[in-house]
Length: 69
Image 1 (tube, rainbow, N blue to C red):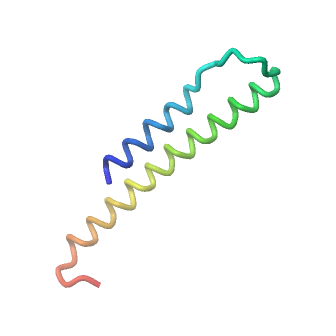
Image 2: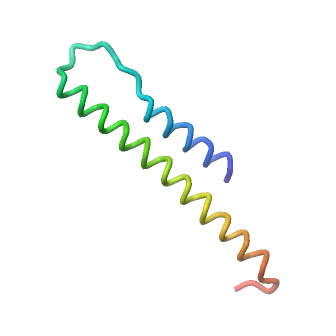
């Protein structure tokens, strides 16, 4: 679980620091691409933090109940 979260967070950071590519794209296309990359990166980081939070809550719940649900 932790390895998956680390992979998601690192991928999110890669999207956040999306490199400038020198293509024949217009300025508007570059802005749109940068906006989408930042949105995807932020969503991946938030999703992985939520994933870690829910995993921690589940582990604490399982350890506090001896019988289970």
